Length: 318
Image: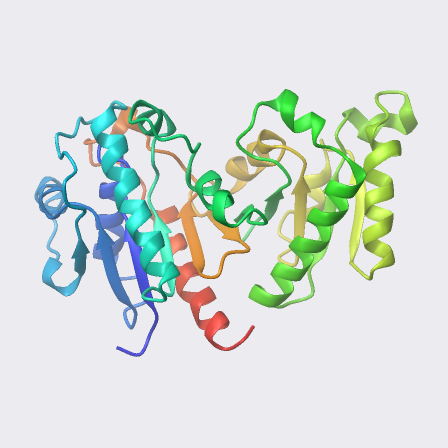
């Protein structure tokens, strides 16, 4: 095997994670020269394969099953057992990547509510990474639109309090450095305004004048190809189908509403700023369709492909 070693955690066992992983590995369109290690329960994997009526030789995959964790899973709802198991699988995959045993990890969706019921304090994968890698950045990539989030899984009122010049400037420059090192290319960065019409010269809010414009100017002074603030209702049109442009969204929904509207079935969540590659599909657990066999695997397939491609670039020093 000459390709990278990619770990895949199956996500919440009560959601569509196991389904989209198995469909992806059965699709035949994922990179075949990579080695794949699955972090989940062998019984869960076999049950999913049988339910879907597909043929997969699971002996070709190295399955890592956490010991001492209940497998009393519940389909279609969040629960403590689901949360404990999905967290342990994810944590083991991260530990293996940190030891250098994996080149990348691809994480199927977890339920934040299941984690909460299990007493796990982190609000998702990225929040967990931030405890060790505080400079990690949540981003989303597709063939149509690219987004980086200045803030993500926090209440909106707290996100607004973080719109400060120095914090913004530090984020801009960190994002620029990470993308240059990890993905190469001539990136252009578009910063969203916060208020309607980007504040309309202070008539609709003064954050643009006091915080955002000075931060953009400071980053430009250091050579960063960045513009803004651009009114948030048109900024994604400016970047649509422009592969080297990335929108900097100031809070979670500001960017992801547009992203999921345009790229829901092919988008990939990428955690930038880690010592290894981490990708994920851009959707959640979809408890409402769990077990029905109707989940679309294309975002998971895209996440596996991107993990593979970025692993090759990293090994080449890009």
